[in-house]
Image (cartoon, one colour):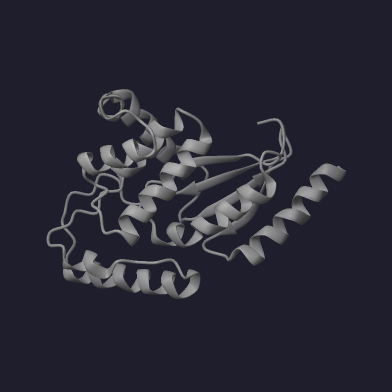
Length: 213
């Protein structure tokens, strides 16, 4: 991009990204359309094939409790009654990629909706039928969504996002960076969860400096 913008690295099955979801909404409300947000899917655990064991379930539950305490975001702990759940984040990421083809606002809406479905509603967002239902909730024809979701092109595009994330050296989510456009380079806004009352003022200062340059 040739003007100031943000790049948001996130995953729809990342609990800290769910905690950060209201912050991204606050940023979009405060700065749009002057500071567009580009969403890149991080790939938290793509291609996982082994079911969660007791140790991983305990670790995930601890993360969820921390996120809830820090952000206030709701979690349905009924998730932990599931047996043999395979925590593969690729299908949910691919769904966001399919919606992103309709516009970045659609991608951010899909990310937010999948977050809520997984964490607050205990829906299985690794399941194609569930993801089709969510896409329909967002206004996408189910047959059209399934065709795109199942396509090799959508899979390639999703894994291309993961590769971009790795090349950028991003190893944790959420990560938000700010670009001044052209050859101005990028500045780290946050690597990990921060509340809106910290992030938004920092962005206001950065954005003001860009306009003054």
